[in-house]
Image (cartoon, rainbow, N blue to C red):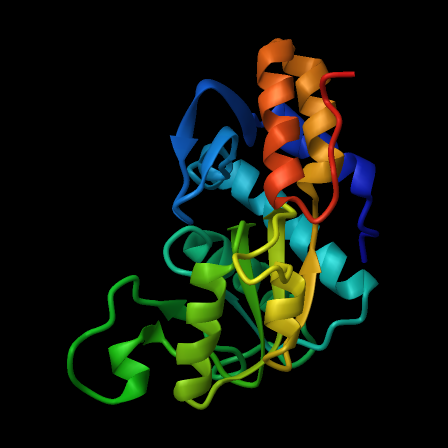
Length: 229
């Protein structure tokens, strides 16, 4: 079993340009405006990088002894990673064989008819399910996914975020608090509070952007950030 190494994972993030900066603020899926982004598209468009990322996920989960039978990626941002991780992990299990593990996949847009397993899924997750999310800001898509999984009778034990932007929701709670209020454990493999200083130093986007991002964390962050210094 490979041990999860946080420094190696952070380097993987930086080297694959998951983070970037904008002089003019962009509008995120959450509706908030920001001068930085975290996007895993560069990674999951490439088979080699996606496999490497899946290995990081498996190491993280095994290091923490998180019980899992099915890895499930939130549609559509983490769908490919969920499939890759489930495939690699299942092949290593002593029980691997015909019918031993499901290759789960969700629909981005549910069908308007049919049973839950057909309405929401191409392959319905089973057993102890770990949900993978690529980026969490306010947790909107993650919480929606957890709700329809519960509605479908799926047992979700944990939600794993590759990148947590470390922002408070509009109600003042963190994503971790919102998820764990549903009885689901929350983990993040990386934090914007840790990554932003690293990529800011590496990319040197300028003090104006640093000041703007500091102001974002003053307003939304679970903690303050100081890039301008």
